[in-house]
Amino acid sequence: MRTDLHVSGRALAKEDLLRHYRVMRTIREFEERLHLEFATGEIPGFVHLYAGEEAIAAGFCANLRDDDYIASTHRGHGHAIAKGCDVKGMMAEIYGKATGICHGKGGSMHIADLAVGMLGANGIVGGGPPLVCGVGLKARVTGTDQVAVSFTGDGGSNQGTFLESLNLAAVWRLPVVFVVENNGYAESTAPRFHQSGIDVAKRADGFGLPGVVVDGHDFFAVYEAAREAIERARAGGGPSLIECKVLRYYGHFEGDQQSYREPGEVENARATKDCLLLFERSTVNAGIVGEDELRAIDKQVLALIDEAVAEAKQAPDPVPADLLTDVYVSY
Image 1 (cartoon, rainbow, N blue to C red):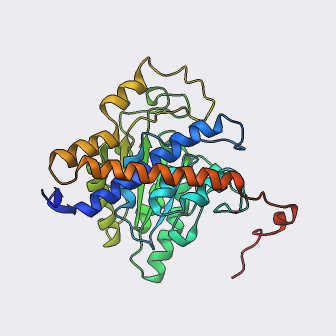
Image 2 (cartoon, rainbow, N blue to C red; image 1 turned 45 degrees about the horizontal axis):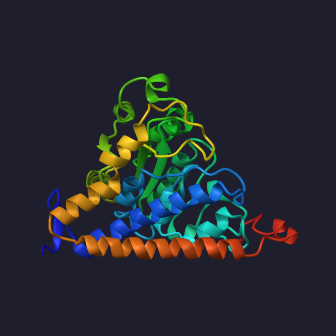
């Protein structure tokens, strides 16, 4: 059996491939379980699921260091998991519990953990790009080689904050990468109705940046594009714009009727383009990993998610006095 897989001349060892699969499987099972749990009415607030887009978060974060940063969106669970946020802490946070990663104060749309470089999910559409410009500037000023990555949806790419951040990063040659997750819909509006031009990535031309389009269902395509852009940024080459075309499996939010979708659209994507299916096919057919190894990971991940939900349901709620904490930062 082979021990590695070459992606554009770079070897991914078997243990790396299994780790990347685990990240994608964890995101998928986390989201699939939330889909079921939200329907019970026990989870407060809104939930926006990332299922179907796992290869993007996994592919980019696989190329980042622990001290690098990411900024996310309202659809941020996958980014948080891929960057290293604690799964049980995330589940408790979504349930609004005191044991949550933000002590139950952020919920699904505001998960953050600066200890692992997760600047936060963000309820503000297009709110992430300015944040990575900030930490990118900090890296430039302090002389580190840290890199920051922002994830933005196709709808968010029409916000002024996104375009202004592209310009600012280009002028200052900041070590940042802008990722557009074009999942087919800005809430319920397809790109052909809200976006001029075929590719968001072409907007990079106006700012003198590299702009690349990749298949967001293909982990290896995303991984390679991410590697090149991140290495370029880390070496002082400035920012890049990467557009990942993909399809989300669920609605804009849980409860979305999704009347805007074509019949069979999701079913076809799950059967033919699913990132986990494509990843398994590539690695197993190449003789690097065995199906039994992947099924073992599946079992372990399901057990983790079961534990996370059970512990979240039993965890204590925040108390009124908690409102007065975490208001100001002490320097």
